[in-house]
Each structure stands twice: as structure tokens, then as C-alpha cells.
Image 1 (cartoon, one colour):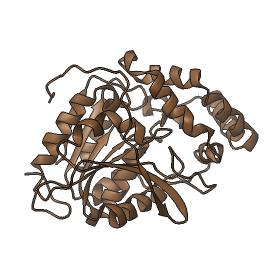
Image 2 (spheres, helix red, strand yellow):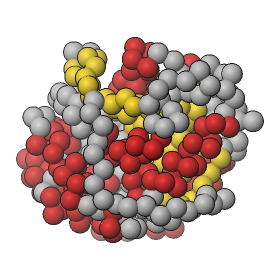
Image 3 (spheres, one colour):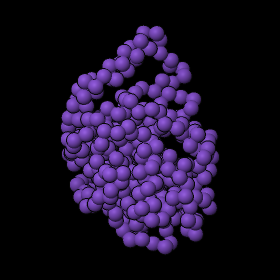
Length: 325
């Protein structure tokens, strides 16, 4: 299925000013736009690794006309605090769950990109009472029958069953893994990947539309890397225990699920991952878009149109998870 295509400009879009919420002694940044409605659920937008609420600015600007829209910086990212904690899907699950309970105050439709998609899936599967629907945009996370799906900043390479490493490759992989377990190596790597030119180069590899990689986007990703604790958050990628597998989470899911795939994403093989999601949750709705890893930022009009129509199709009388009509 393909949504209608609308042209858009990739010029500057000012982020909506936000505020802070205190959670477990840490400052969590979030933004709110639009007005509450008794006819439709609020939306909660969750960014991917290294991104922030700013990454949703094009979506918020349009979606606020029809919904109450919230966006949040996960602990360790954006303008939120960056304590030296062990980061995991469970930690972010609890953050999102308590944010919905304490701040939004009613079940919301969660929309997450990449790592944020995995965190949203954890909430929807394990804290279903606060989720009215789930939208996953090129969502990260491993399935039980495969290596971890590659998250851009994890520097991991997915090995397909037909491409098993030879002994030399395995040895080199073990050496690299050992090096990245050393604090000095992680620090040097962080100092490298946070440079603006490296950020731009990385984005250009995963955005199909190169004009969407603007100075504003690069700066929005660079700025949080200067915060105290940012290096430790980056390092935690290499020491965090692997979370619950995606297939196990899908088996627990009961709410409406929309998958939006940027099919040109080199990190997430959409055409290969898509059947796995459908295998464990056949009731889902799915669209493939001509975009890369971050379709919400690259083709925001298309994403906004599909999300709006899909959310409005959800049973409006439900206060929790239901299946789409």
C-alpha cells in the first residue's frame, strides 16, 4: 500500500519550546502541542539513538492541527539528563510508562523511530494499559532467530544465515568487541563520531533524499553530544545487556500496530524485517515509503498523512488497547 505523495520543503523548521519533568531525580525534557480531544487519543513521539524531540519538529508542526501531540527526550539523549546509568529498553519503557501516567494522564498512541520504536514496543507489550496504539518507524531490536538488528551508533553488523563469518572474520570481530569494551577506546570513538562532518556523512548514508540532511539537523544531533555525561551514554551501548526479543514482545502485544518503513534504509532491511513482524503480529497495517532510516524527517508529509488516517481509524471509544476496525 502506498499513501499519496505530497511535495515538501526541507528548509528550517523551528522546534516547539518544551519544558522539564522530574523522573527518578533526573530532568526529562518534553514538548507538547495541540489541544486535547475527547474524540481522539494523544500522540507520543519517541526519537531514535542520538536524536531528540527536535527530530519530530516537522511532524509536530502538522499533527498538532488534529491531535494533542507530545514528544519526549529519552533519558540520556537530547536535552534530558545524562546520568551514568545502565541504559536499556526496560529503563526507557519505565520512563515512557510513567510519563504517560504522570503527565499525559490518558492512554496515548506511541510512535517511535529506530531505538525509540523498540522502547515504544516494550511499553505497548508490557504496559498495555497506557497504550491506545503503536506506530513503529524503521524500528530496531533483535528477533530470536537472528543477530541484533543494526542500530546506527552501535557499530554492530548483522550477519545473515547465508553469510556466516569465517574463522578469521570471527577472530577479528572478537578483537574489535574486546577493544570497544575498553573505556579509552569508547571515549576515542565517541570523540570521532560526534564531529559534525562525521554526523553529516552518516546521515547522508541513511537518508535517501540528501537535501533533507541540513545544517539544522546536523546541529540538533551534535549539540547534545557536548553535554556532561554524553560520552558515558554512548559507551553504555557496548555494555548494556540485550533486551527482550522483538518476537517475544509481539506475542504479548494486543493493540493496533502500524509499521512505516523507509525502504531505502541500509541499517534496517525493511523487506526482510517486515515478514518477521507480520509472522508474529499478522493484524498489523504496513506502508513502505521511499525514504531512508528516518522517514518521519525525510518525508514528513507522507508519514503525517498515514499516521493521521490510521489513528482516526482506531476505535475512539477505547481507553486501552484494541484492534483496528
